[in-house]
Amino acid sequence: MLKKRQEDQKRDDVDISDVLLDIARSARDHSRVPMQWDSTANAGFTAGTPWMRVNDDYTEWNVDKQSSDPESPLSFYKRALAVRKAYPAFVRRLTLLWCFPLHGLRFMATSKMSPSAIRPSLRS
Image (tube, rainbow, N blue to C red; front, side, top):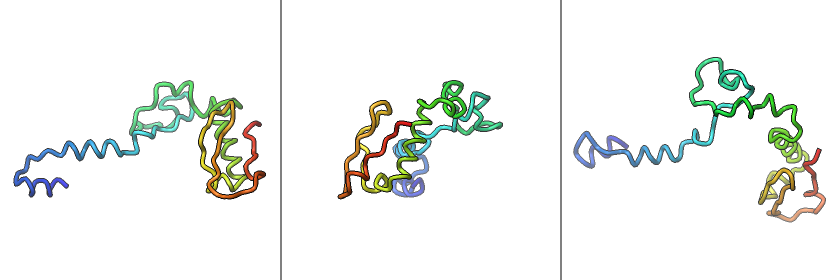
């Protein structure tokens, strides 16, 4: 990309800030953070230096704290994944429309299926 611009503009000092901006917008690191395992240094993610800053709330929001709380987001997603595994219809035939852990989930069927295929509960 750089060489092509240099050739096109016939100079070495070309501006590629638009390319760098596009790369920054599409980078996956904007949606990823080191896993917050516990409340120790670096959230238990590494004894070294993480490549990204650990979120400031790691002492409150971490796997260790959520593992013992049946109402935590971690527990909710564990139940949701168990339902997905138990009912194959959730894998390719349903599209999640709305998700609110206290009130349930709403799905749209994307192919014909029996009503019994879509009646699981996420309540434990």
